[in-house]
Image (cartoon, rainbow, N blue to C red):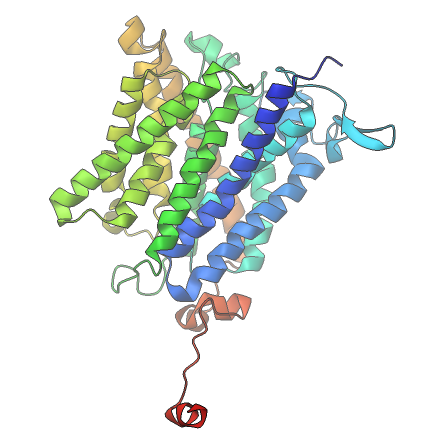
Length: 432
C-alpha cells in the first residue's frame, strides 16, 4: 500500500460530506414545492433514500458498481466486494482500507463518496412521484433500483472496464472516449427516465391540471437550491478525485453555468409571464448545475456559460411538456434533470476541448455522447418500468384517493408539518 496524500484525502472527505448534504437539500427544494399536506412525506422519501441506499451500498452496491469482478462490462459481481470485504480490514484494533485510490487517498473514502452519489440519484426520483406514494413501497423500490439500475449503470460508465466508459468497447468502436465527468448519464438522465417510467405507471394526482398545486413554502425552495449549489462543489469538484487545478476549475465552470441558467430562465419567465419568480430562479439554477455536470472539466468558461444559457432556456419550456402530454411529473424531474442531463451530455460532443466537433471538425465525440445518452435512457427506462410494474401489481404504489385528498402526511406519517392551535375568545378572557 502506497503513501496517503493527506491533501487529496482531506479534499475527498470534504467533497463526500458536500455530496451527502445534497440529498437533504433536495428534501428542502422539493419540500417547499409540494403542498403543506405533503411536505413531511417528501422529506421522509429523501430520508428513506439515504438510509436504504447506504445499507444496499454496504452489502452489495459497491461491489456491483466498483468493487466486484467485471462481468461483461455491465456490472461487477456482488460477491467479491460483499459487505466491503475487498476494501475494509481490521488492523491493530481498528478498521481501515486495504488499498488507496488512484490519487492516493483511502478507498474507504471513495466508498462513501460514491454512496452519496447513489443517494442523491435515487432521491431525485421522489420529486416526480410526490404527494401520492406509500413510504413502504418507496423503501422497497430504492433497494431494488439501486441494485438493478444505479449500480450497474455506474459500473458501465465510471468503472475502467465498463461498457460505456472512456476506455470501453463503445468508445473504441466509435473512435472517441465517452465522457461523463460527474453524472450526466448516471445521475440525471438515469433518475429522470426512472421517474417518468414510474409516473406513467402510477398515474396522476387527483386534480392534476384542474386545480392549483402551488408551492407551499418558497423560502424552503430557495434554501434547497442554495444548498444544492453549495453541495455541487463536492459533486463536481470531487469528481476530479484530487485537490488539484481540475477540481478548482470544476467549481468555476459549475458556478458559471448555474448563474447563466438562472438568468436565462428568468429572462424567459419575465418575457412570458411578467415576473422574475423565486421558484423560477431556483429551478434555473438547478438546471444549469445539471447541464454542466458531465462537462465541468472539459469546457472553457465561455462554453460553460453557453451551456447554462441553453439549459435555462430549454428546460423552462421542457417543464410544460407534462401538461401537453398529460403526465404528472410533480416537481419537474424530467424537465430539469432529464432534459438538462441530455443537454450537457450531448453538447460535450460539440464543445469538449480537443475532440469536440467545434475543435476537431470530427463527429466522433458527438456520436459517442449521443450513444451513451441513448443507452442510459433505454437501460434505465426498461428496467425501471419492470420494477415499477411489479411493485404496482403486488403491493401497490399509491395511498387511497381519500388519504391523498386528506393529505399524505397524515395518511402515511400520522403527522402534520404545521399544527396551528386556535385560541378561543373564552380562553383569551381567562388569561386577562
